[in-house]
Length: 142
Image (cartoon, rainbow, N blue to C red; front, side, top):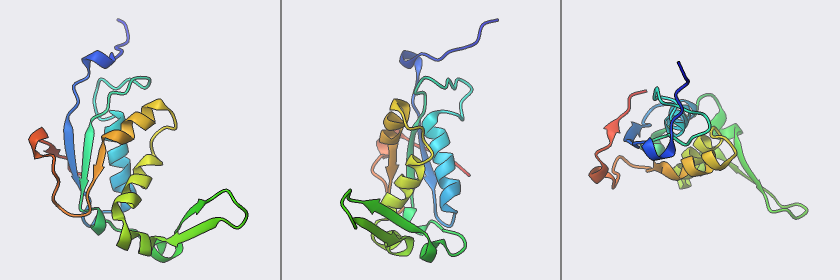
């Protein structure tokens, strides 16, 4: 018996909706990254992009456990001397919760072409409304 290998032409992509309200950030991000990679399907092939589309709603109501809201920092550097910028996650969650969720999911995807193509299938919304009803997404329970 030979091993099954998925081919890119045979992949049927589905749409899933994940409600992040009241759930920890990391738990939602791991489930979303797994769906984006396609690990939830029996046809998963590591070297083929066989993942599905993911819509995350209520990203503004996601929970960070412990003291992470005040102690965890988002850091970026301009490349110049003294160019380090730090923003606490409390301020980041108030201003741009979609970015926080996208960054968490992107960090769990591989750093190659499969990961770069997978993150394009992620849609994150701060509220409970999304504009993808025409795709008939299924609710995915954590």
